[in-house]
Image (cartoon, rainbow, N blue to C red; front, side):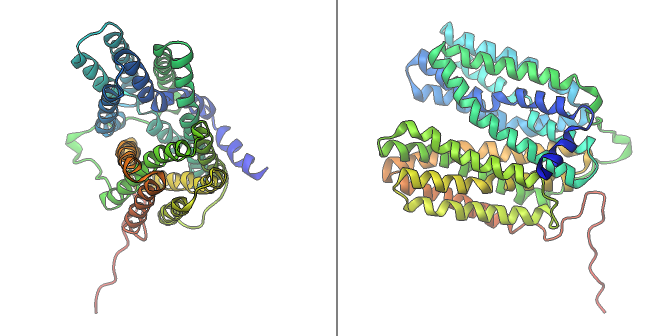
Length: 407
């Protein structure tokens, strides 16, 4: 009951429940659009290679331009930027579908994919910036971030299932259509909620330079996030291959669902805890825990045992991500918070495709068990980068600790 009380308290904040729910809907394209593009292009061209390339163009553009959009969100405000981004995203996705269905030159399809990926509204960063704006107590912000981590898991579990079902059972366009409606409609509804919107921080050149970003913390944190993205992408591909090699490919979804369930459950619990240690400590422990959790998978041959280990291994995911974003919220100046959040979340996105590709190469040459070593290596990189975080991280408005003068 104390767990539920913590979440009830933050959701009772005026407007909080509405912006969290609309943020959930608006985030669906994150897990639906890339796969939907693959299913659509493959059905029209008959080539998974071409389909993967178009989806990759979409994902790369999103990774590159997400931080720039975060900067605009801080400067101009969420309502203006999200409204424009949502419309551009919707138009670009419609043109992408039209170019595939009408047989336009592939250059048009790639161009539409790049524009759509680059304009995808950065709702994940925006919703967390809103929580940081409407809540005062760090423990409540921690609970709100845990809630959003759980909702992220819901998006990544339900999105691929929904888009695949619609594309295969209804029409290849149907999955993308739902993703576009959810993304555009959800983003516009989210942007329309002015009462909880953080204030814009337009750049005033007459008042001096903008507050600097804390790169001493953000650089290793970005490496941690990218390594975790590699781990996620590698684990997904490797787990599907693991089930396929044992003749139970249909169980791959259940295995990945157990992994997500472990993360979801731990995220719910973590959000209700008032931590005595700072988020930098939790990032270090969480990254090390993920590396440790991936290690036994190399030795496993049983599907049932793999399911149990993935359930346990998933427990480290949400707490690590919550700690990463909590640390970002703590150290980044409020006038650049969305930009800082985008750096961390872009790191995760940027790591997924290389992780999936690398693990696929290992699977082809050495089998799925060996490919789990890719996830171990990614976890070790994350753990090593986490050790480079400052031991004591001051808030942006606090002066850094001064050394005692030598006598």
